[in-house]
Length: 232
Image (cartoon, rainbow, N blue to C red; front, top):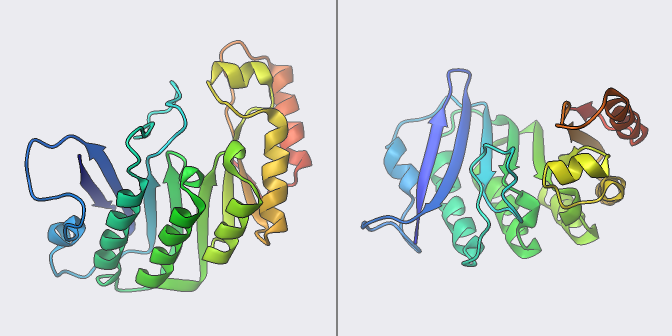
């Protein structure tokens, strides 16, 4: 099993960094190999202003989600974090200017073990040139956020957390194949704020099959009651 890298730089200076886990017929890439991103980029410098890092691991592959994700049954998180560290080092050495935003999504980044999540965050601060006002967001599943994870995020330098609420209706959560309970959202937000991270985004999904307009209004009311800085 090896890791196949993917990276793309958009016209507005946004870089996407992902490592897909897939069976490769042959090739030298694998555990302990040199950075594949460095080979793709060569020695050129990059006019990048923001970066997205993709962590593919999930509890469960929800049917509505089109993002690359896997339910890892082979305990590959350690190798993944090692390879991401290599690619961050190669990418960071080519950045021309400090980054104004970093977004770590998935998948479920907060599904990483606390020690691995800490390693990933420290790889970002060690290798990437971050501006003094950099907005650094990590996506979080409400079920995975406990005081330990929240402290790891804060200590690692994260200043914004996007909580995948999706709905406060138990029936809609079942339809979406989400495993958390509505009360888990407020608990997760509380842990994040207690750790010292004040900027919170909540994700909501409108128009879940079988849902009603009154349920959507209730979703908005419950989300706003948590006083997030942003809704998406």
